[in-house]
Image (cartoon, rainbow, N blue to C red):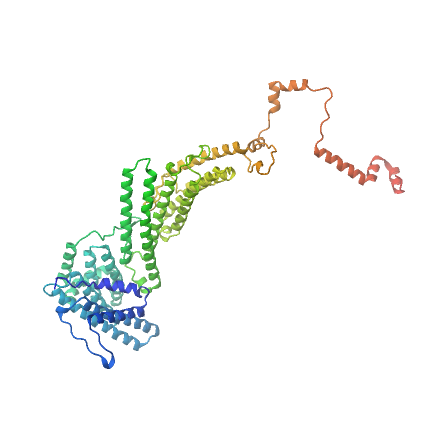
Length: 628
């Protein structure tokens, strides 16, 4: 047979099967049923079936030279089925305090160890055969799997010394596999099992009474060199062989570049998430390389076209980030629902799945904002609008009014993404990031109000346009007063990469544009209808009205027209031209109303008026006897 014809990866298979078939949420019964079905199919394929009860027939022994991947997989799934049943019974015995159930669980655990021991023995035979039929890495994974299972069994029996020795050696083997791994997926795979072993090592050390039970690395460094050669034949040679084998096959195709957050790398400890993030990394590299090529060949006339090409490239990045966010969300939900995963989420200081989910969501929103801002920039380019507007309509005189709703829609999505980003836990925990996002919220709101104002101005709604321009200035002042738009406050790298904003240039430019827009809009409004809110043409009336701005001025300044006329000599001429008999002046409406009221009052109370005209007792007695 060919060398290394056995390609089984025990840890990779176990992690994948456990994650897919129930153990992500602690459903041991479902996983046990899956293992039973898998074993049945493997026995049928290998022709190793046996009956039940009286019809039971022991399958024939398989010679070493006839061993295949299926035989090792059969041993692996037999061990997994027995282990899953043992865990299910242990949970039941813990809840009910039932001793017979616990004994049954220990018997199933022993059965799992028997199958794991058979798997380890077969792997050792294949590894030591000539020619070698299994790789060093595959054999090392099988050895680590058996040691972990044996250590957990000893811990279940409260044999903490033996359990600590087996678990420490398995942890040292996992560390060696991690250090020699050539792909980020393998590193994340081994990190999953390291996270499972660490709490058990700490618990066993605490039960023994070690002074520094929390220092797992020190415990492993102390026990692994001493107990490794005893538990694993050829322990040192095996680790050296793994290192040599992995170094010879080093490849950077599956290496995930570290993601940084506040100067620290974000650990990705899930093979599924590594696969998703590798796709994201590849899409981002394609986006960056495509953008550089387009920017190198495009000039000013082709800027809009290059922007549209880059916008289309964002679809791949957003699609892969959406898939990664879905995977991270499932991992966070499984960790929240499974207490054992919460306990074994990693060493002290290691960020959990909830942080990873928040980080991936942040990246998705960041690239979405970057795409929307680029799209808004492409829409505001002169080449994007074939229709030209008069320059007096708005500062964006070369834009088609139909472009404004599209730009406003993109700014709406930017605001929505920024608001979602502001609610993430990683944003709340970072004051600098939250302050920068708040500043960009204010800046985007101001920019959005400005474009809405220009859209209203294009249809002659000057009152709304002026009000929106004032609202934009308020939003800009809010961002400046909060300190986020202060020129002396640089934005953190976590925000600057997707929303670059120069506080000294961009903010000042927007402020000047708003000031110029305000002056121009008021002039256009006054030229259009004298500054009134609604035109009289709509109601059919053509009554003359004084300009609004003159009315406001005369509230504070007295009209000097008489003095001006006197100094101009017009007052003398007017007096000379006046006739001797002046025409009767018109009585104001208010004076006429007062006279009418007095006459009506006199008719209603004639006695009072006569009495007031008469004098003394005569008038009084005459009124008493009825004389008028």
